Image (spheres, helix red, strand yellow):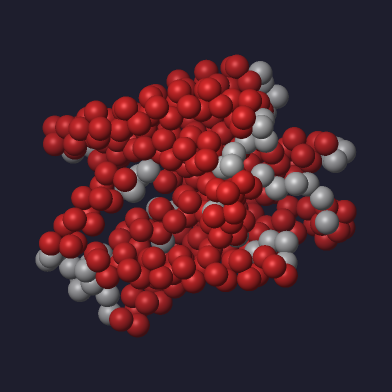
Length: 318
């Protein structure tokens, strides 16, 4: 059995926590009559959450790409890329269905852009790093789709060098990146606001303002997870991340159900949405922890894996 990299599970859980606070507002448009609490929450989301967490998910997708192919090859599979294509196709189908309920969601985009990663798999890590940086910087002008692919490449690079398997080896680089990203958060936020005011290009503006925040989150959590005490404290978050796909889809189901039952469209306040999102996360953390005590993975993760490997190969992977 392949040993899980707990830091990646924690990062997935953390990203999932941030994404629900954005998705709930995108799926259900509430009242435009904001009270003082609503305005404070919106300001906080604008600085710390909006467009900050999809970058982390994109980076983790790239890490997962590298880990999947390298592990499949290590197990002697003759056609690892075929398995990855099957994996992407299943993700595409899931995203297609999910897109019907949440237009613009990311799974469909990931499945399509993920195809472009394949030619980079065997390239030298130095080339992948340079390509990732160039594409990501280009994305600051071209928008989130380009940033997404840049993060795919940087995630792939981090998998190549074993960043999360041995973070202590890269402690200095992580610390420098953490400090630089922290120092850039405020000026890049003002750049975000300036781009929005002068051009109205929201996607580009959020890409500029969100990138340093996302990098700071990832480097900080990665450094903290080197300590056993932190690992124990964040174990519930790791459970949430181990079932990230299941929980991501369930969030949509729960949010739309609450919206219909409580007649939210046009009436719900941002503060109410945030309370609901927090309650959903708490419920998912508890349920994920309980499920993973009995099973190795969540139900959607199991079906995704089964569709990728097939029943016979699935047995061998256990």
